[in-house]
Image 1 (tube, one colour):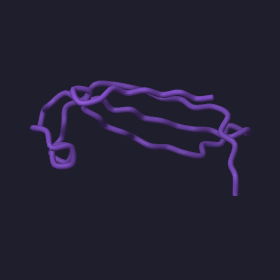
Image 2 (cartoon, one colour):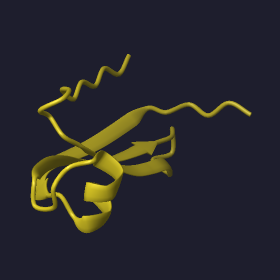
Image 3 (cartoon, helix red, strand yellow):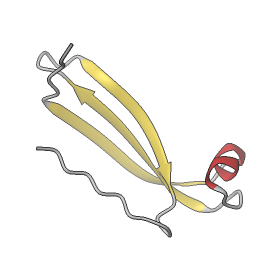
Image 4 (cartoon, helix red, strand yellow):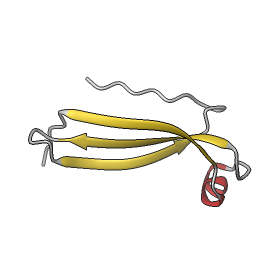
Length: 67
C-alpha cells in the first residue's frame, strides 16, 4: 500500500542525555543532545507517522529535505 505524505511538522529542541540515551548513544548522562519530534500527515491531515529522534551534533548534523 502506498501512502501520500503531504505535510510534515518537526520540532527541534536541546535536551540533556538521559540514562537510556547515554547507553544507546555512548555519551555521558547530561550531555546536550538534540531531540527532533516529527509528525507526517496525509491528504486529509491524518497523522501517518510520528517519531522522536535524538542525536549528538558533535558527530553529525541534522538535515531534512522534503520534496
